Length: 102
Image (cartoon, rainbow, N blue to C red; front, side, top):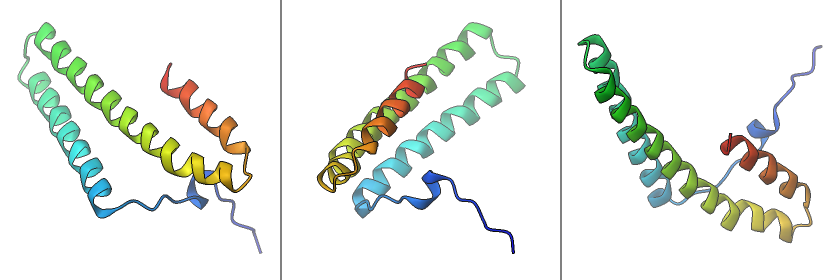
């Protein structure tokens, strides 16, 4: 029988309050709406500069989402893992930060 392989991200979970989860989902819904708006602008042959401005707004929204999520991650998951002696969480956090800063 073939053994299933799991990625590390699939094995870990974060328990969030309903309020935290709702806030994240609302932000993602707004970003999704912005993306749909940009697609519509492209379909309607909107002026390039106008599309770029909307694209910049989406980037800012995603960055704000990431900032909130990384702060929450540090305050909860990282602190928990460090208290449990799981120092490898530091390397994971550094790798994540490097990806976010590309």
